Image (cartoon, rainbow, N blue to C red; front, side, top):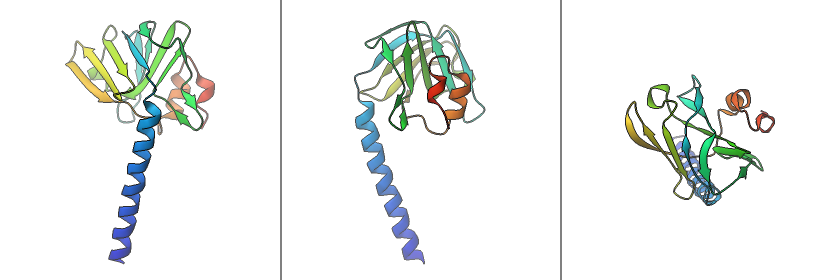
Length: 144
């Protein structure tokens, strides 16, 4: 029984590493965004946020976050952008700066409450329902 459990854990870790590597390649799509937070909504699920921006620069002028069965952590439509990422309400305020570099898989926050901090970007998975309720750009994409 113990040997079976060890083999199962090894296979799960191996599968997880393969998925992470594949996601890393998919996320490396040269997307860059730099802007100022207009407003945001924080879920009660591990400080997940939908961040809204209208004052931003990006090398994309349109980006639909739904690609096949995956959801990218950012969206652009017209003069508006959204970011879907892990950040708590105490870590961010309106007026703070956000920088995303998809090739580095990073989101960088220049904030007043706690100073500068950096996080990882990943495909959105467990918070699809929350994004569907709060997205102003592509709510139709986030069907469960």
